[in-house]
Amino acid sequence: MLSKFFLKFVIFTIIIAFIPKNSNANIYELSCKNNKNTTTWVYSNKRKQVILTNVNNSKTKKNFQMERQTPSSFSSKGDMKGLQTNVTYNKNSNELAILQKSLRGSNQFYKCSEPKLLKEE
Image 1: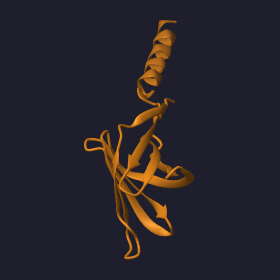
Image 2 (image 1 turned 180 degrees about the vertical axis):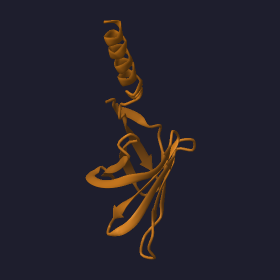
Image 3 (image 1 turned 180 degrees about the horizontal axis):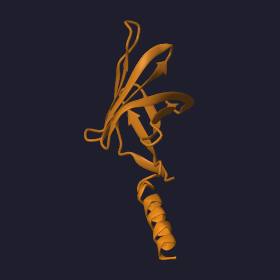
Image 4 (image 1 turned 60 degrees about the vertical axis):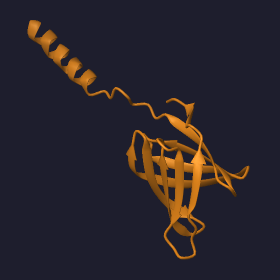
């Protein structure tokens, strides 16, 4: 009888130990601007996704997949205007860079406000 209780207790403890402590996928919004454009970005570190949602108050939806991330920055890849594009954000300097790998592409640099928590999951 005592061995069954002990076995159940050990199994329960193992299950609890492997539940992630921070399993929520917080979703943040970045508002960025430079001399010509104003953009809005939505990102989630847990989902490893960055989405461009607004350019100069016009709705759009461009998806980028995060490749590298730290608590204070991320780097992601995707396509924009048919060109391979990298998006890099640094929270310490609040700067976002859009870099395109083509001679026809353009590189854009933005200054952003602090990320705003949109949704906590």
